[in-house]
Length: 267
Image (cartoon, rainbow, N blue to C red; front, side, top):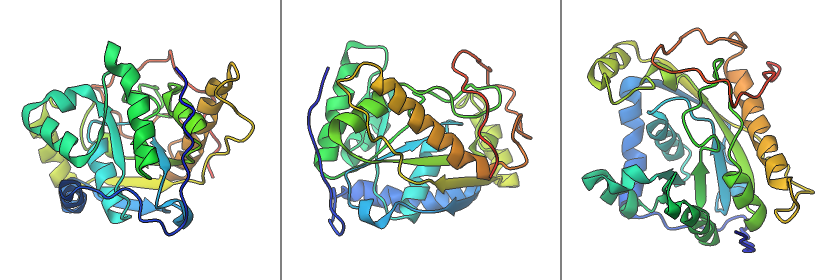
C-alpha cells in the first residue's frame, strides 16, 4: 500500500482543533497522573512544529503510558491524537471517549489494520500531532531499552513528509505492571503511596533525509533511525541503569526476539 499524500505545516498555524472532550481530558490527566507519580518533563515540541503535522514517536513500557503521555501533552499544550489498539474503541464507554476525542484506531491482527495508516495520514493532513508507539506493544526487551520497531511509523513519515520527534519515558513501569488490569487495585495503592518518579524527555527531530518509501528497505532503515533516536533520548533518563533497571516488573515476560543491542551510550 502506498500513500503519496504530502502534508505541510507552518509555524504559527493553529493546527487540528481538538474536540472539547479531549481538551478536558488533557487538563484532567495532569492531576490524575500526579496522584500516582511525580512527573518530570524535559524538553518540548519545537515551536515551528507545534501546529502540525507532526509525529511523536514514544517508547512503551507500561499499561499506564497513555495516561502519562496525555498528562505530558496537556502540560506541553500539544493535543496529540493517539494511535491506539482497536480493543479500546470497542469498549462501551472508553470507545465513545476515544472516538469523540479524535483518536486513531489500530486493529492489529485483523483485516482492518490496513485502515490505520490512511486514517493517520488524514489526521496529518488536518495538521494534527499524532502520537505513536513504534514498537507496536509494551516492549519486552529484558533490559527495557526500545525494541526493534514496526515499520508503520516510518512508512507514515516517509509517505506524508511529516517530521518525527522522539519521546522517551522512564519509570511508568513502577506505576502499573505489565499484567494490568490484573492486580490493578493493589498496584494503584502502592503507586499512590510511593508516587514513583516518571521522567519524559523530548528529543530532536529524526533525520530521515535520503530515504524514500518506494525504495526497498528504506522503511526498515527509517524505522531503525527512529528507534535509535528514541533510545538516545531515553539514555539520559536512566544514567545509572544502563543495563538492568533497578525496579524489575516480575510480571513482564522478557523476550529477546526483537532486541536492539548494544544500548546507547549514557550521556
